View 1 (cartoon, rainbow, N blue to C red):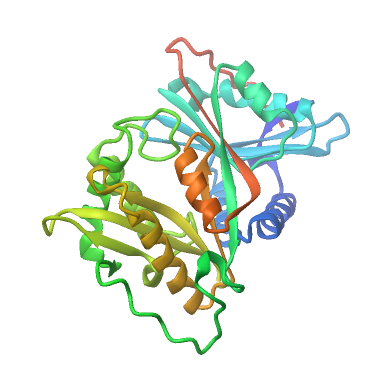
View 2: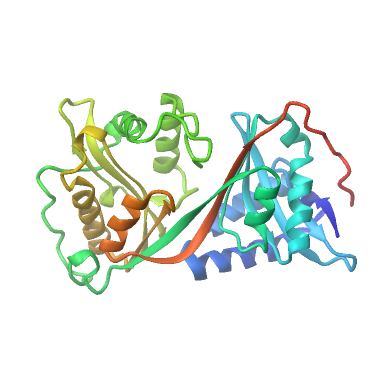
Length: 325
């Protein structure tokens, strides 16, 4: 098996790969990735998004991946393989690319069922972590909020909470910075924990559809002691018209232990239900046991898992330009 630059694929072959991946995400995660994959295909065909395919001796595509470099970190955006050999072929090719050689670190955050991916990442020096993908049914009283109807009026918002206000974007970014560890190389967002990274992260959630379409009606904040501070916040997106996704929930360290996370999540799920969502989904790190217990208590259940992996890049990384047609 050999690796090849994915720009050598025909548009028809690339379209088949993207269609199969979009169908997998929609079936398993209720996540409509077709708009994102359409942008991926435009960038692939224009030669501006690097990627690789794994072909067997008969010429069949057995795997593919794409990646980009953002602020010095090579980030793998998709990884698909149907055998351990295809997994190894793609991994070895990615770590030998020019982009990897120039990067300060490499990061995977992928929904992948590639055989032996976790084991092979670990064998190549990556710190690997699983993220649970949870789902709750919003049509039969999930979270104790009762079933919804298309004509159901919105419940009065908890008076201590506010709906999303774009003017609070900086305050949300500052809250996330306070709520998370200062830096975390394994975190798939804002790894360095800088104010710029957190603001960029919130801006991406609120203005792009990389994680679904922003859902301001179901995103809420809890004001803090001053107008510039927040005690808590949720950021929700919509993956499909009937699927809400909890992209972020955060509570300031000095506001914890008072049930605020549950109140924030309850308010968001109620708003999502009234807006017509039949289900809600979220991602949570396996190491975040406290959050996992909260979600389970609110009737979220495991339906899939993502793989998060990272490693620093040695400055003497070898560079390979051996991918061929």
